[in-house]
Image 1 (cartoon, rainbow, N blue to C red):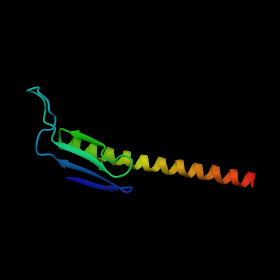
Image 2 (image 1 turned 60 degrees about the horizontal axis):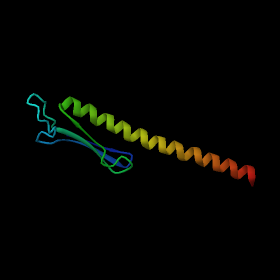
Image 3 (image 1 turned 180 degrees about the vertical axis):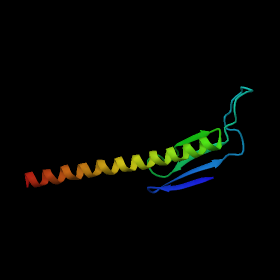
Image 4 (image 1 turned 90 degrees about the vertical axis):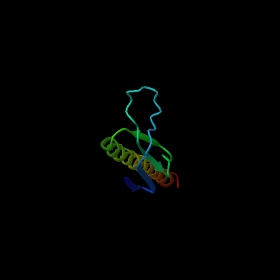
Length: 92
């Protein structure tokens, strides 16, 4: 259904074909869509959805979370690089 390469990871949303809600309530809606991350720090993070619209929205939400996590890790590395460089300049 949906596939997005994102920052070295892959986010995939698929139709499961079977109800994965595993509810014993007779009026429970079937959970038939799954979004999963493959690769990176969020590898195997997963969410399930009831409707196509929820699956589409959930896919985009997870893509944004992956991108935000990669961005934050990059910012943190840059901050440390700046600190180390300044310390090296000061104490050299």
